[in-house]
Length: 524
Ligand code: NOJ
Ligand code: NOJ
Image (cartoon, rainbow, N blue to C red):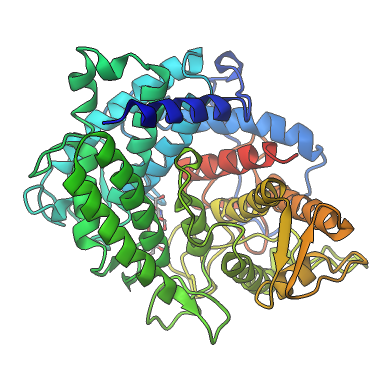
């Protein structure tokens, strides 16, 4: 195994640490202050007057505090949950989300690893590493828990989407298996392994190395280490159907495939570092096949990506945005990304999705009396997908609602596109991306042209960056307008009244918000 690999990781981790600053642990209030509201109220939620900057500063602390509150056993909502268990929401009825979903938990852990990486020796990181270690131990236990999807020996049990908060299996009927979970968990734990190793450079060659690393990764088959078991699962099951991230349709899904692809590529690098050359080749080979498969999600006729192959749905789906975000390779690894946030395919799919959601939800209409025509891309509450009929409590003919985590992921796509343009210093407008950039610039006097490369000597290049930032902010502004006064974020906000609905204090809503704010910090 090459010490060079870890030196490179260390260097990147240090650079990354300076990319953004973290709020201090002491600033979080541990007093829970939930405002009650009546979700059936028909009065429209009044606009919040606080400036975006002031709200962002406040909300960042609130979001982290409320996210940590949902982690057992120390979080104030997690006292009944197993150590390291991340509950989806403290809501125990109407709806009951007091479970640990493998997906929600892994995504939350990735967010916490980002925080840890910034300053591994802060007070905050001290608490975080306890959570990360407990999470890892609990995942080993969950992997070995026989459940309705299968067991550990045939690996099928790793596709189980959710467990009771105490770690016992959830045995009622559910949309299972869901094959994104093991990939997301492997991604989260690989990031932690790299970050921890980078901050403890002597560990790798010390006597303690074996006891720290081998529960996470060990070059042996059958796999018993957590990450390797997940990588084995992903590499053997990615071409089989399963339920989508919304737990409703069985098939082959973009989000699932994107995170599986990332897991296998990062897994190949990790395997190599652990001297597991045969596994590295196998993961790489499967990743290669998966890359070809993922291209099938581009629908030439529709002109956008689709979330599920051979589905009756339109295919426009927040899962496309999430797949692009969570499938994006860890920056320190220098992997070539597939359908990254700034790709033509993601941007035109985002445009089509925004236009659909804009007209679908009354809350997205311009306030009465507004004369200015908003840019086609400006701040819109985004839901999961057009055909959604889950209202946060049950199924309703009225249809779904906007979700905080989907609205937030659009903002993140805009900010990450800015980062990419700043780094690459050029913008290539193609026939494919022209509609996106035309919409983006429609309120300005700039007219983009297809098959043209703009660079830092073109005024249009800067205008695109400006508009991307403003548009990202306009999506955050929507979150701000529909958040509770104390900063609480639930799962959804009502399509008509704008009031929060669905599971309160959704862990994933807070994590998605934090990721968007950090992406914004890179560019503002
Ligand atoms: C709960 C699931 O988690 C959600 O994704 C789904 O839409 C509803 N049940 C309705 O089936
Ligand atoms: C329903 C969502 O559709 C699903 O993605 C999520 O995992 C669960 N709720 C828990 O938050």
